[in-house]
Amino acid sequence: MSNKRILYLFTRTPLHVGAGSSVGAIDQPIVRERHTGLPIIPATGIKGSFSDLWNEMQDGKASRSADGAWLFGSTDSKKAAAGALQFSEARLLAFPIRSAKGSFAWITSPLLLQRAARDGVMDPALLQNFKEPQDDQAHFDSGAQSKVAIQGQIVLEEYTFAAANPALLNLDKVGNTLAALMPNDPVWQEVKDRLVIVSNGMMSFFAQSACEVAQHVRIDDATGAASKGGLFNQENVPSETLFYSVLHALAERRPEPERGPLRGSDDALKAFAEKVEAAKVFQFGADASTGLGYCTVRIHGNPNA
Image (cartoon, rainbow, N blue to C red; front, side):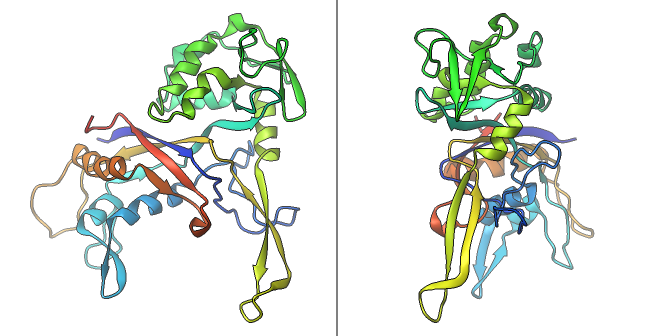
């Protein structure tokens, strides 16, 4: 039987998890869901970044420690075994976008919230009376004290949205629930006042059109100057984006003929949580040396808490 936790990944810097080359204007696009176009972080990248904590140097080479093999698996021909931890891909929950008032807002959509409720991120009862807004409408704080609304409307990028029927959703409760996911991050606490719920179609559109596109030039090692034809565009998820991943922990799995008491799923969660909570910030994706991919990580339901 498995134990389940939710991992929250809040980007501190732009994030690039590449999908390979492209024939379009973006030479190096990010990984996206095929059917929605929403950015994701593949489970392999998440597992690899975390497993680095359990790497040890032996004879100048990195090797996985015994606890690392227990938690993340081993490919040793004599002791091959699956790890006790299983990660899902990290799904988008909230995406930052430019706002004509207040600099920026966080957008989400019914699909993202319904997925989060299904995965245990929030209480499904919060969405019982929810109705998806029209593409030219959104749910947001439209009052006079709003940090993002202008005379009852909101302008995101170059698009204007009218306020949808507020009686269909308790926006305050949703905002407070989201803020509680990363309680120690002062930036994320602003989500209560900057939350905008758009239609699923507009969410997909913004997530595909409003990511950062950075231009780079390849340097010729021989000349130290720009390589001919070396200009390329790289797509990045912006900082202040919130993802979540579902983590399952299982009892220890070891190959025969090893003997001794097997460690349970609670033990795996505790060992994992201790190092993650101590580190707090992890790098995912490419270009770590240039500062991309640094994320605050929190485990919901920490067994040490």
